[in-house]
Length: 345
Image (tube, rainbow, N blue to C red; front, top):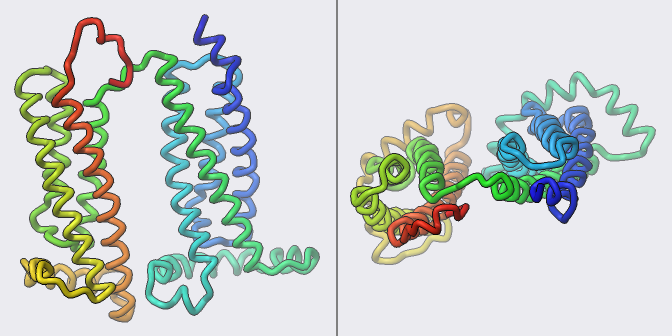
């Protein structure tokens, strides 16, 4: 009864109708996103995010109390909203740049190259209708596209925050026990996924596969604690703490090496950036002749690869901090009988 009361009243419940309103606005703007042929229109992420958020909100509103289905829907909505937010933010950033800047070799040049043919096909289909609408409203298509993309970015950020907050609320109200080993399993899988991009884009020391080894160890830590907590699982957590430090150190040095090429830094320690140079050069050359880079100029290729590498390093640095935190937490956690009903351990 307490769960029903808290779902029908209180600040948490007010987030459901707010999510429904935001989802309806997103769903409505998804048509304009397609009609005006924005770069990522082919992904249909505004439409997908709006539908998932509407289903999540109305399921909770009509049910009026949280359950496991609520939690699953909110987690799915959070994942979709995160993809929607990052794509919309990148789209807005690239649209706000001039045509000359978008072709200067940065990451927006890659977005333009990959979506140019799709945008041209879309414009060919909607060109006459776009002309009628823009002429009658006295608008410029450039301003309209930036306005639509900016609105979708704001909506995506709001949906992401709300669905994430509601996910934790539903997990707490339904007494869903989210333990440290659950986070370790998810974190390990994300590390393994990021390790693929670390290898694909020839990041520094990619042939050592430090992120992949850390991801496997993180999954082993979670699995060992899940199935049979023992001295072995505690030992793995101790090893994982040192592995997280090693991963963070290697990524921080990799970031320093990447930034030294951008800002032309010269430090004696940077000589270690050339370790395994022959292997790195061969990987980089094979990347130059892969899709879509074989038609690009060399400065554009190098600029985009460096931008992607820095993004990968930054993301994996964040993951390594989480990895260290959960490993330390699992190592020094004292389990007492009276604490077995505590949630989010």
